Amino acid sequence: MSHATKPAQSNRVSSYASKEEEEAERQRLTVAFIESVRPQLPALLQALSKIDDPREAKKVDHQLALVLFYGILCFVFQAASRREANRELSGPVLTEHLRQFWPELERLPHHDTVNRVLAKIDVEKLQDLHVAMIRRLVRNKKFDRFLIDGRYPVAIDGTQKLVSKELLSPQWQERTLNKETENEKTQYYVYVLEAALAFANGMTLPLLSEFLDYEQGDTEHDKQDCEIRAFKRLTKRLRSEFPRLPIMLLLDGLYPNGPVFEACRAYHWQFMIVLQDKSLPAVWSEFNGLVKLEPDNRVTMSWGGRRQMFRWVNDIEHCFGDNGRKHQNVHVVECTESWDEIDPKSGEQVAKTSRHVWISSEPLTKHNVHERCNLAARHRWNIEEQNLTEKRQGYQYEHCFSQTWEAMKGYHYLMHVGHALNVLAQYSEALIEVVRHKGVQPFIRFIRDSLVHPWLDPDKLAKTLSPTAQLRLA
Image 1 (cartoon, helix red, strand yellow):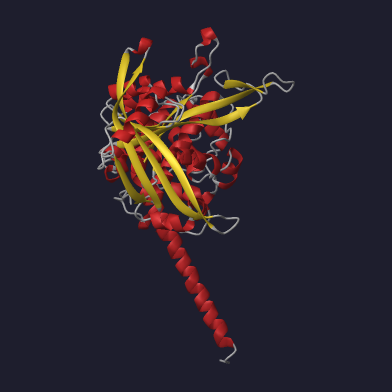
Image 2: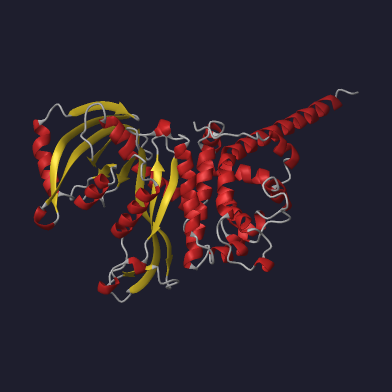
């Protein structure tokens, strides 16, 4: 053999070895992903199978559970639309992989079938099974390491889902743009109040959704639904679904008021609520008057690269209701912080400062102020990040999968199930570092490609999966 041929042979061996390594890595990560979500599937599939099927039995090609599970998978794999789902998530390779759950499966349903089903079934059952999945995780103590003062941090935030020039359903909200001008026009929109588990490690899991519904407003006085009304409905449902769960509500500046304080304490919930400068002037007046007189109620620390100084005043009485007859004691904490960062334009180091104020349901101390403020209150932002993730990073929160109100809500609930399954996988011990390295969307695309293209042997993949897989969160 000539010297000229040896390097070529060496390159072929190296390329073959690299291909083997790539296949092994793809197999390993796909198995890790499946095993992270698989513990949730038996109960999930059982719940899907119990939903009443309104279709004529003789005209049914696919079980209702399969149709709905396929809808969940479309969000797990972040299909951008019904058309994309039909084009990319209906091939024979994915079908072969799904036969481990449906041995009799011949082909996957068309996404139009999902839409027709969602328009007919009781879609609230989909939110029920999502809540049941979270309840099982709580019961199995999967989140115990991430609690704050032994409580589950639940963030609540409202966000716009859809907007239209036309009224597509009587439940849509409406608003007038460019009032008192020649360009005045009416716009219709869908708004949702979301509740999510918001842990300090960044893991945020969708929990409950409450849609604002025009017909839930005060129609006698021509007032449509609003976020405060939806908040009352949502917290009532949260209490009903988790009657004994120790909860700490994390709320924004819309909610510091007596009725909210009263309701939380009636439910035995703690809270951390943003206090804006113009809210509760009497509380502010007392805080500003007392904070200088209580020098022991302060602490300084470094956290997250920032220099922090906390000051607080406990037991401030807030009066509300008719003639101020009702009273609630609250506790106010202020955090001022400073840090240095590089200006992207000048390249010079500049000093930055910020200030945050919260109302706490519990008295503040030097021992709990870090946990309640840095590990709890600040992570109210998690739900804003979740909403942005669902809008901008693959879950198509703002895409109108259906103009039918019930089907639209059904898609929303399927999206939350799919998103929750992805979050559990991404924060599993086996995948958390991989996801941080690859990025969330590239990782999901990697798993999607692995399961829809003929790169993995379905039989080999099935044999590799552990029959007793357990979710282990990092």
